[in-house]
Image 1 (tube, rainbow, N blue to C red):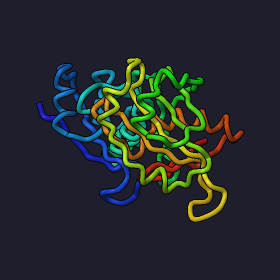
Image 2 (cartoon, one colour):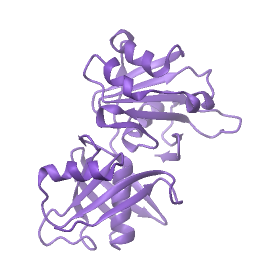
Image 3 (tube, rainbow, N blue to C red):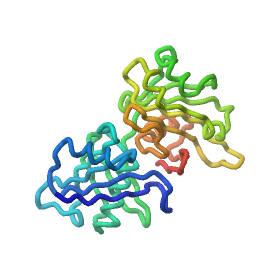
Image 4 (tube, rainbow, N blue to C red):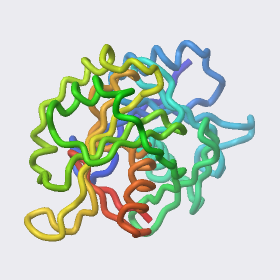
Length: 262
């Protein structure tokens, strides 16, 4: 069996920037273990598998497909940048003429649409709830040391822990923070955390003015030490910061690229 595989740099218009994902087009069903083996071989944070839902489907003409995502270690329930990469392969490589594509996934139906020369994704919104510090204190210590934590939230829908650092810190502090994500595995004792988000309120002035928030994301539980721009984490961040800032449209910045949210 021959499987077309594409490498797509998401969230950028320049080669070797953004966040790369592999995209595989499956004409037929693939043995379950081969998904993981291919993802391990690709050695990217995510490999997306687009599959036809019916024998008569066509990658250039159909508008609804199955979609799964694998890290080198596990299958994951949601990945934003690999979904964007999958849509880009269908729209730009396969020349799919539909204005909207629907992906059937573990997180429900996700939609991607072409808007001029951009691709817009509709991702789920995941709520966060206050997290007791004592339960995850060792993990927080491993992540940020003695830095001041302003808020601590947990998203049960994604198993992500959101750590908001003090508003007194500048963006450069977050960017320059040395994080040993591999240590998170032994520091996390609850068994409920599968991703850690560090975030900081944006500045209204200065070099990086205009950003509503900044973030970094770590997922060693899925074999990804740090993901430079991740849609699934921003599905949590957008919910949190929308509530905190009272805004419905925001501009967030990861370590590599900015992301617009509506």
